[in-house]
Image 1 (cartoon, rainbow, N blue to C red):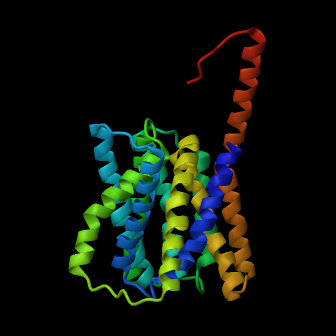
Image 2: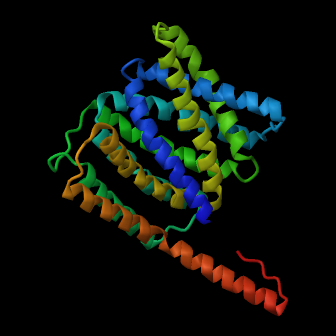
Image 3: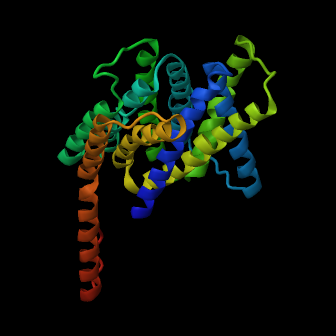
Length: 307
């Protein structure tokens, strides 16, 4: 379980860096093109890997419907909301709005997946979000524009995608889920971009290479890693780790752009980590309890199926 958390933290760190990369790319490309470009690059990469490793399987009818939902809602809609919102919003507002995802995912997991939502998880999430306010607020207030109205759509669609992945993980591997969902999203969305938008292909090779690498590493590989770890921990608990993303983004801003770290930001960071610790401390208790039960079963020579 500790390994799964380490994987999630690594994914969040990469996503924090990729957030800065997206802001850079939005200066060169339109949000709609970047959305289609991301889906296309990842789908091609994973389809090639699937053919080489011969790992593709035929999805069942219900799984195919879930894959279509994941591709359209969790990927196409998410990318459009995300890139368009980032173009017209600030890093501060985008990070805070996106971190509503743990609460939305927990609610969806409770309704759809019947996962247990504890009081600790809810209280911890609220404390973390309050901490994010101190870390990311500008002069104690937020100014909402068009981008800030679009970013909640990215948050909600991302939360739905976590639920779709959790449902599909009962039989399909993270690689298959990633490959099929991105491929479905690309073949549906790409024709609209190629026909309906003017694309400027006259960018330098370095810009194109940077765009490709940011997509492959920042979305494709980390998506597989996240899906695999989330399958072990559950959707609601995995989503709580996302609270770290704005903190990591803040640190990267400090290292790259030399943005100062104030007492207010440090206090907010402490609240965020406190909230995350409060939300996840019960996991260690359950793990120890199960280990103790397992040792007792071995001693007594009994096998008890744990529900």
